[in-house]
Image (cartoon, rainbow, N blue to C red; front, side, top):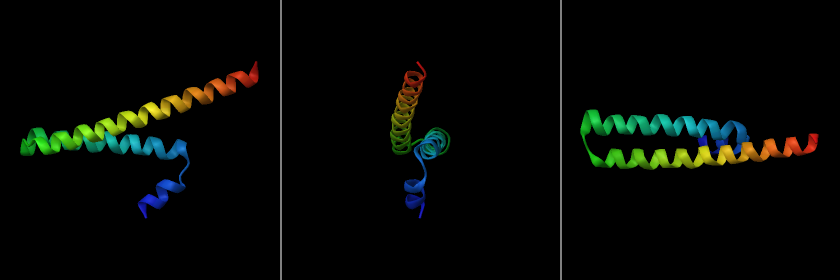
Length: 76
């Protein structure tokens, strides 16, 4: 059900949701690794979630720049 909703949402809604979820999830996993368990597994999964979030941020920034450059070219 969640996958269907994420596929139906437009890019400008879906990607910020994934970025927020990824950042919160990574922070929670780092908290679990440091405060509660002290295990490397949670820290590794948190690092992977943070990497996934960084890739999403890069994709959104690139799309935003492309969109701005297209709108600026149409006005000139």
